[in-house]
Amino acid sequence: MLETERRELIGRPFAPFVSVPDADVFQDHQRRVFETHDVHTCEVHLRGAKARAKRVRLCSRLVTTASAEREATCCCTTVIDVDAP
Image (tube, rainbow, N blue to C red):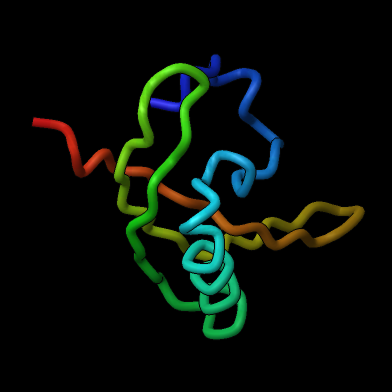
Protein backbone atom coordinates (compact mmCIF):
# COMPACT_ATOMS: atom_id res chain seq x y z
CA MET A 1 0.00 0.00 0.00
CA LEU A 2 2.85 2.41 0.80
CA GLU A 3 5.17 0.86 -1.78
CA THR A 4 7.77 0.35 0.95
CA GLU A 5 9.00 -2.82 2.62
CA ARG A 6 7.45 -3.35 6.05
CA ARG A 7 10.84 -3.61 7.73
CA GLU A 8 11.68 -0.14 6.45
CA LEU A 9 8.48 1.32 7.97
CA ILE A 10 8.83 0.08 11.55
CA GLY A 11 9.87 2.88 13.88
CA ARG A 12 9.44 5.59 11.24
CA PRO A 13 6.97 8.49 11.49
CA PHE A 14 3.76 7.94 9.53
CA ALA A 15 3.01 11.60 8.76
CA PRO A 16 5.26 11.80 5.65
CA PHE A 17 3.05 9.20 3.94
CA VAL A 18 -0.13 11.26 4.41
CA SER A 19 -1.02 13.47 1.44
CA VAL A 20 -0.44 17.18 2.02
CA PRO A 21 -4.14 18.16 1.76
CA ASP A 22 -4.96 15.64 4.53
CA ALA A 23 -2.10 16.57 6.88
CA ASP A 24 -4.38 18.61 9.17
CA VAL A 25 -6.88 15.73 9.39
CA PHE A 26 -4.07 13.36 10.40
CA GLN A 27 -2.62 15.77 12.98
CA ASP A 28 -6.06 16.29 14.51
CA HIS A 29 -6.56 12.52 14.59
CA GLN A 30 -3.32 12.00 16.50
CA ARG A 31 -4.03 14.88 18.87
CA ARG A 32 -7.44 13.39 19.76
CA VAL A 33 -5.93 9.95 20.41
CA PHE A 34 -3.31 11.34 22.82
CA GLU A 35 -5.71 13.75 24.55
CA THR A 36 -8.63 11.39 25.11
CA HIS A 37 -6.88 7.97 25.28
CA ASP A 38 -9.82 6.64 23.25
CA VAL A 39 -9.90 4.82 19.91
CA HIS A 40 -10.35 7.25 17.00
CA THR A 41 -10.79 6.84 13.26
CA CYS A 42 -10.40 9.12 10.27
CA GLU A 43 -9.98 8.87 6.51
CA VAL A 44 -6.98 10.30 4.66
CA HIS A 45 -5.15 9.79 1.39
CA LEU A 46 -1.70 8.19 1.43
CA ARG A 47 0.82 9.15 -1.18
CA GLY A 48 2.76 6.40 -2.86
CA ALA A 49 6.07 6.67 -4.63
CA LYS A 50 4.61 5.73 -8.02
CA ALA A 51 0.85 5.28 -7.80
CA ARG A 52 -1.90 7.79 -7.21
CA ALA A 53 -2.94 8.56 -3.65
CA LYS A 54 -4.96 5.84 -1.92
CA ARG A 55 -7.86 6.58 0.39
CA VAL A 56 -7.51 4.74 3.70
CA ARG A 57 -9.22 4.61 7.08
CA LEU A 58 -7.00 4.93 10.13
CA CYS A 59 -8.03 3.41 13.45
CA SER A 60 -5.70 4.42 16.28
CA ARG A 61 -5.31 3.88 19.99
CA LEU A 62 -2.65 4.41 22.63
CA VAL A 63 -0.58 1.51 23.88
CA THR A 64 1.59 1.75 26.97
CA THR A 65 4.44 -0.65 27.52
CA ALA A 66 6.52 -0.91 30.65
CA SER A 67 9.90 -2.40 31.29
CA ALA A 68 12.27 -2.31 34.24
CA GLU A 69 13.95 0.78 32.78
CA ARG A 70 11.02 2.90 31.61
CA GLU A 71 7.43 3.20 30.50
CA ALA A 72 6.58 4.21 26.93
CA THR A 73 3.34 5.26 25.26
CA CYS A 74 2.86 5.06 21.53
CA CYS A 75 0.03 5.43 19.07
CA CYS A 76 -0.78 2.16 17.30
CA THR A 77 -2.69 2.51 14.05
CA THR A 78 -4.44 0.07 11.75
CA VAL A 79 -4.60 1.17 8.10
CA ILE A 80 -7.55 -0.07 6.02
CA ASP A 81 -7.65 0.44 2.25
CA VAL A 82 -11.17 1.75 1.64
CA ASP A 83 -10.61 1.94 -2.15
CA ALA A 84 -10.00 -1.80 -2.41
CA PRO A 85 -12.73 -3.70 -4.31
